[in-house]
Image 1: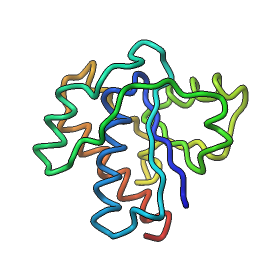
Image 2 (image 1 turned 180 degrees about the vertical axis):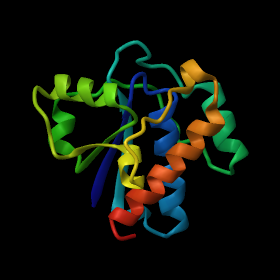
Image 3 (image 1 turned 60 degrees about the vertical axis):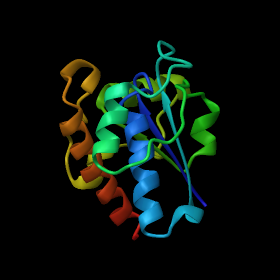
Length: 149
């Protein structure tokens, strides 16, 4: 089983969007039994909060079920547990390294799987959940391709 953790700042917008969309994508390919998927934030600000309402709306508009979720903060032990830790932006990677206490080859930025060094913009600040969804989808398609699925 391939264990994947999606990470953003607060775990209510981007990482939860990625978790729900990736769950949807692998179910469509009949690969659900091959993956364990979760998401977390690097910050403690949103712990316990539900998925952001605009994230839920964007997912539903694209026919994607929202995975039931409450925000959690990434733990140091996650580095050892997960096979892939996929960050949404460069700041997330810095914070993951701070939490872990070191760099890890398991950590990658989502859009790097699509051949881009760009960050997935945080819709908490931009208000543009549609562009965030599109960027996440492109990154996830690249990730699946990199895994040979």
